[in-house]
Each structure stands twice: as structure tokens, then as C-alpha cells.
Image (cartoon, rainbow, N blue to C red; front, side):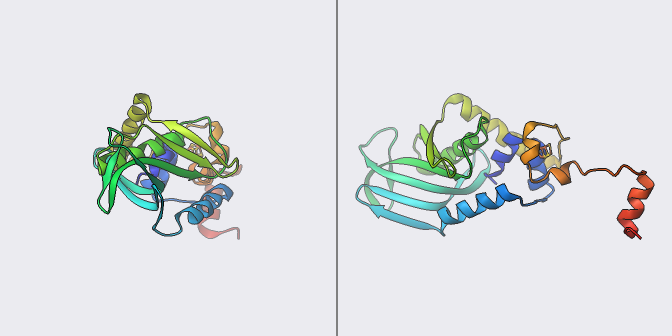
Length: 213
Ligand code: SF4
């Protein structure tokens, strides 16, 4: 799934726990993120105004990345014919594509959100045979749109992470934990690094099997 690229960019082990081992734990951040997306996605929906078509919760796919997912908001803006414009089956003229992905919190000092947006842009480029130069991340806490440029470096990073996802998935590998600052915010911390009791291993297993009695 395309959304996994954000997880693997943050932590390879977190991605594998979710997507290889199918483990998931909610915390305040994950619930807030879900609520924000429910508001945005509001089922598949298209809105049309003069010179603008807004598509919400659009299914997207890239065969070169081998990823599929949902784009929160895809805006089609009426424009002139050119390298960065596309045609649409049911609408006349030429259209420029602008992507907006909604995120809880505020802009991060990592590329996690940017690679996810870039992967979405690559999907749309393949689907509409168009070049997409930029997109936007909208942060719920700061109510701010951050423009992201899909330069060569970000595109290469996105392809490398997609390759890594396929490799780990095929081999069923969960990488070892690498403790980092982000572990404090990770909802999977207790699964990733269960706290061992101070007593003996024998007592731990007895308690796990027979309970406290
Ligand atoms: S606790 Fe840290 S190492 Fe473990 S999955 Fe989360 S971020 Fe990765």
C-alpha cells in the first residue's frame, strides 16, 4: 500500500510490523489522523466549479512503483495545452493537476510526508500521462499548506523506498529496532520493544502462561 512509504521512511521496523506482520496499535496521534482523513475523504466525491474540478479520495496506482492507494484531494485546474497539462475523458480542454494531502500536526523535519506525496504524484503522472512538478501538504494543527517540489532527489528516494518495501515484503523480513527520537511517538513501541520484568525469565514465562496466581 502506498501509505506504507511514509512508515518505511520513518522507520523500517515500524513499516514491517504494520505491513509484514499486520500489527497495529492506536494512539492519540493515529486516531487524530484518522478523524482528519474521515473529514477529508467523506467518500469518493467530485466537486466542479468554473475552471476547477476537485476529486476527493481518488484511487490511484503506479505500476513502476508497484504501489496503490488513495489521494486525499486532487485538483484539476483549467489551463493551456502544454507539457504539464492533461486531458480528461468527461471534460473538455486541458487541465493542470494539483495534489493536496492532509496531515495532522505540523510540518516535520523528516521527508516522510514528502515521499508519500511524491509517490502519489508518480501515480497520477502514470495515470494521466503528465508531468507533475509540485504538490501540497496541508497540516491540520497549523492550517498551513506546504508546497513540495518533486525534484530528482525526492523521486529517487521514493523509488528506493518502494524497492525496499517490495524486497522486505517478499522476504518477510522485519528489521531490527534502531532506537531513535521518533520511538517516543510510535504507537507500536510496546510491540517493538516489550518491557522485560526485573524478575527472572522463568517467572516471566510462568506469569505469561498461568497469570499472577
Ligand atoms: S519503537 Fe522505534 S524502532 Fe520500534 S517500530 Fe517504533 S519507531 Fe521503529
